[in-house]
Length: 184
Image (cartoon, rainbow, N blue to C red; front, side):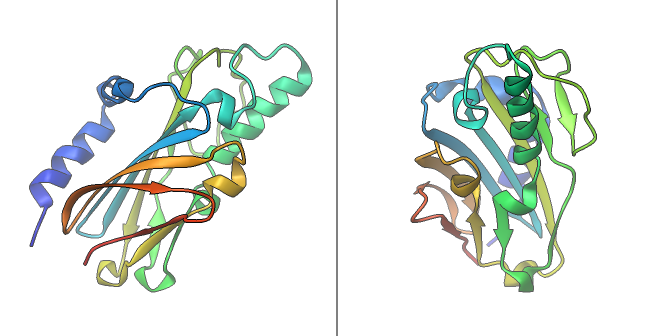
């Protein structure tokens, strides 16, 4: 069974800024992240959205050097795909550079870890990060483990929309149930 047409449409949606607007259907809820996962033909797309409160620790402009350091640390943490998403080794998945979008920031997005600037515009906002992985042995891809609850302890759950070989479904991840099982 192939889901290529659906995944292509989802991949296209993930690649355009209007997808962030589509995410507006999710309420701004502290302690909860929203994740979209699409798997097809050895490509895994993951879109993570969470509040600045959960990722940074506050939702306003950084007022002190310590708070500016918190914003930079949060930026670094969300762009650290290896800590947030782990695949079974046999699938041999390799990440492409993640993209971070922070509404109201001076720059619309960051690519990978190359950004050196400050983000003082985090007031009551959601951060969105898009990740893309290519798996050399997609037939071996069985699950994705998420480290986001260890990295961001204020997150209590993640509502996950999954599109894989079995179709679309919704799952919930938590710190104690952080594995997303994929269909083959």
